[in-house]
Image (tube, rainbow, N blue to C red; front, side, top):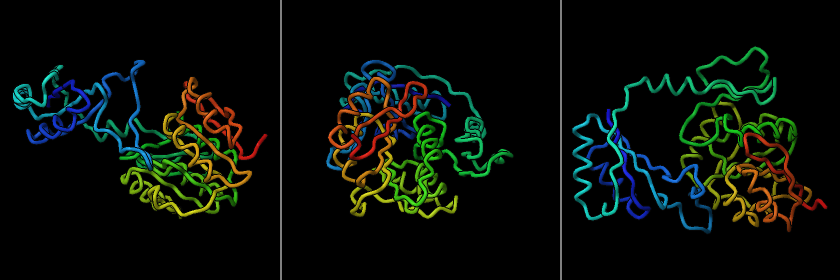
Length: 297
């Protein structure tokens, strides 16, 4: 197989992607061309805000074709189109055939939350010491327990126990945090996400683990407050969502925020200062988990 690599502007991404699909690309993906630089930025959409954009200001578009001829022909046709003006063909490169299923599985092994609580893919046997297990495979939604932000949230949940409490997982992704909260004693758990695929994945993962939890779109959240609100997303949406998340936390309730880089902590804490005294709970690979209690001095 051959990969066609393109560079284009944000307003070209949709047209380029549609054209590549029409040219029988096996797959099309879009990346931030400025990733891992100071110009990197996140794309997100939340209730009351515009939906996520199709791409970044400088987007790298990757298309996979069955052979070099098809990739070259696609590049030639694209360069002749007005909507690709200013775009660049970066490369056409061969991609080695691999057993993608086996490769993917090899990258996901059991994750220890505590010595007795583990996240285990279905193709692995649980470790002998595991007394509590969440069965979870990588899928269309974020959250397998391997990322530092998810790890920290899981360990906070395990430490707290959440016995008998009402929990909201805002930005539930795969549902892993909601499932953990329920397995570790929460009385009622609700997860929400703007991505419909995340809700599908969360419901399936909850069913696989025998967990009764509700997963709904943000606009369908029932009214009321929760003893614990968890939001493992990113700093920018956390700041925008501060008033909405704060009003979901019950008096004396607890807020757990993750997806925050160390350099972003002060700005995030300031956004929640009218309701919470936010403090760092744990650091992991440059990321922070922040905790606050409503009404705390």
